[in-house]
Length: 230
Image (cartoon, rainbow, N blue to C red; front, side, top):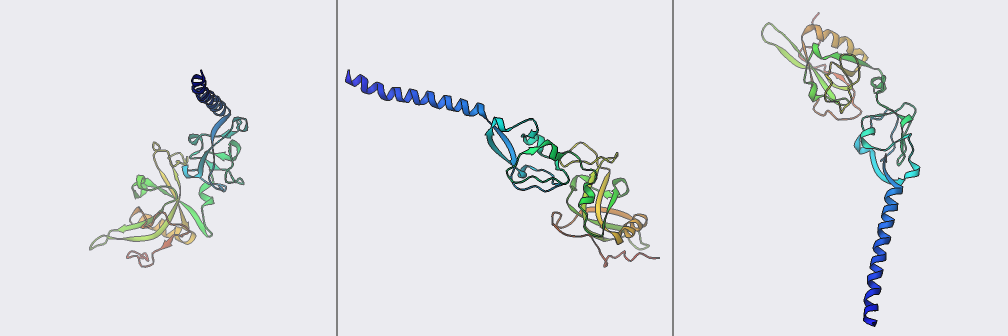
């Protein structure tokens, strides 16, 4: 009899522990949900990417209909003007937007302008260029002896990509056709670019370091086709 009791006690303990674990797991799963929060502080006009998100579990009562919790609903959206999202904070619908009409202007440095390049007027591989990259502008002109070609303007930052109706094409959009490329140009180089369009063929290619930061566009004064002939 004593042996049976000794055997039953640990068995009952294991059974009770298992039941308790199942109950607690069910309660935890029912009361907690997974949500995405900011992995670091996000400033206004920030394009939200996967690395900006961190997934955590929180009590279900803390999440309401004003909070976006899924990655699919967050990636590709922008933090609104005058808003910032601190590290570890929820993403509220009112602080985000899908499109920013004036985004290109916010990416300009002092004495720069937004210059629109129509892809049907230049040679460009649209699939190789993305918003935020730096690109070089090449000019090729016909000479009596042989064509001359050289870099005319270096490191033009791409600040916007648009379709034929002027609607911004977001990074994850693989279906829309690029028609307009907006780049940041120095004010004094706008006339140079306009003249180059009439002089020869313009080609836009990624720069040697397309993802550098803090660089301004620069006219290549040693270009073999510049200064332009009168």
